[in-house]
Image 1 (tube, one colour):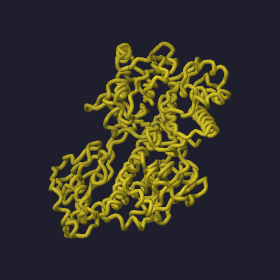
Image 2 (cartoon, rainbow over the protein chains, first blue to last red):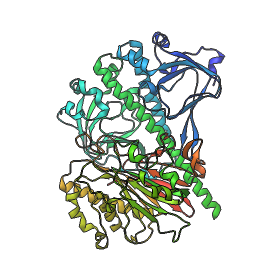
Image 3 (cartoon, rainbow over the protein chains, first blue to last red):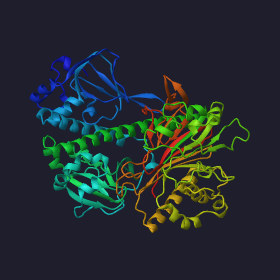
Image 4 (tube, rainbow over the protein chains, first blue to last red):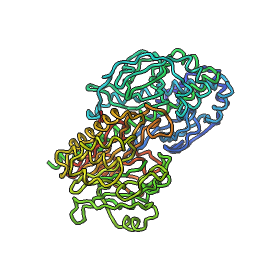
Length: 334
Length: 304
């Protein structure tokens, strides 16, 4: 586990995979932090205002589940980043992080990165894009853990893709459609530009939009209706998320370039925009206001997806324990 | 729009559920976390106390008063322990077309029927739809409908769909009746061309089993705006544990999931910190089933 002590020096923010010059410049935007063993870095439910790049020590990420039990999720090692959601959204912390060894590293506050992104400073744009990629990877891991969980509930499964597949429709009035959808507020000034890079699609209730393993093609922005994303099981899909108006589906594959991990279908009759993954790659580090408006919404969606995947995992774990206890006592009684 | 709180488990002081937590049901009257609205149109509860006279029969309390100011309720809550609870605060549009009276206060429960129900949501176009829905309500229940709410009709449709509504039914039978009622409403909405999303978050409890449905008709389909269920699916959360109370300065269920036996299901968490709360999935029902002295929690897809 402590390979870095045996030889190779720790690369700050290695898991972000940024080029060394950009990382070097970014390091100057951060402040050093140090923790004693046992110190809390941040608490679940607390405010999220910074990301942390660990250079030495080890941190444990844990979340509470019903029954007030603490479940360890992962260990953060030197070179890793933790709390990076904070750079994308101000949603409260979804886990607690505590030092399990004396630890140190760099704290990068959101307000500073937001200002640098707004200025179009290339290292900050690269960081934002790298955090999005990192988040996509973390969500993929969460989805894989859910898929591997043996204790899914057959009663919660639903038939998948019973309706006709999506089809192209005539372009609508995007500005009118996004008015009143709070999640897309940043797009109001860029409706024309966003419509210009997207295709309009309609899908009837039950229609399959993406199947697991599909090559990354396009992300889908829900304008009206809702998409359901879930894990394909024998017998149907286990829903993880409902994407209502203003939400985006298909982000994981589009950002990390691997196959689609989820099954996605129309939970309601849905009108959506398809934005090609290839366009997204070019826009990720583009300082233009249109690109920033697009990426801001994508960043928030990634944080939401991550929270949902973790909550789903927590639910599986907690329910399994709750119900297993019932079986045990029933056996004892008989 | 309203807020619901329900509980099944070890007997717990009513005050600890209704008043004590920092976002308790009564605090949600004026400052709900997940609803930008005041819930001033009444409070009601149906509760089961195993140590009371005829424990299978619940006691009821309904008032059109703003319950925060109700000293009688506060006094009762500090004396009564309940093993089952279905409580509701009613929130309605701020205008004089709404009828504020005791008949419209939830939970609903007909004479001799163990099952009680509370509703969070609003069926658009209900006043027009109800005449054709009437044929699906058993006559003995139709004449017991006393209020003017859509909610009481959802309850009447559901208990009418039960083969024997006068006994404690298995959760499967209650689920089937809920699906039947929602399907009738879905069909009526289509015939009437309703173009508004409508939420039907429903919690049913008979003191033995609890079924909580999180459902919205046509979620997200129509013009966004201030309408419920347009961009956010109406919330419903749950948590479980063994011992509900004040632990480490925080109201929560502790004791670990393994030893857990008590479940709270509510429109929103009762505490500002909702780390130990889980969302009921959208388009699904949470079933809390009693098996002997234990309880099981299950999720069931609602395909309507």
